Length: 126
Figure 1 (cartoon, rainbow, N blue to C red):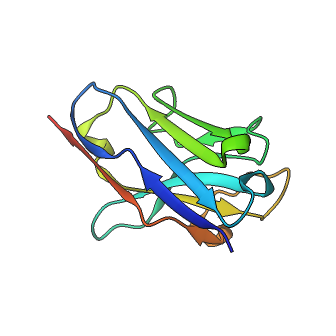
Figure 2 (cartoon, rainbow, N blue to C red):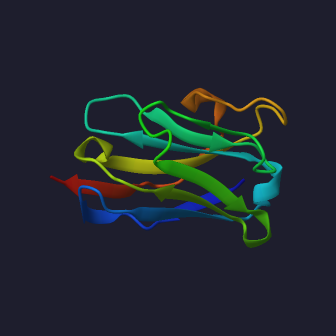
């Protein structure tokens, strides 16, 4: 079992940046694909970005492409989500999750992920 802890959320203004971190314990992050999801009240949890175990293949939602960057440092058992040019529409609880769905295909849906963090709130004021 892998335990995930996110950090780095907060309140920022439009146009500012934040970096979220996701630290894995009781397991090796290199064994897993990593995804960042976000969810607002009453809505489904949507994929923001994901990367395979080696970080060489990534996928982004259209709404964050060009503004967000997913990365990972397997030696530190940590994944990151760099968020630039934040917009009020980015306000949500952000979750990291890990998946063993495939070593070559990026998992895109929440059901493909086995373990989740507790989430971190990101609020962007206008």
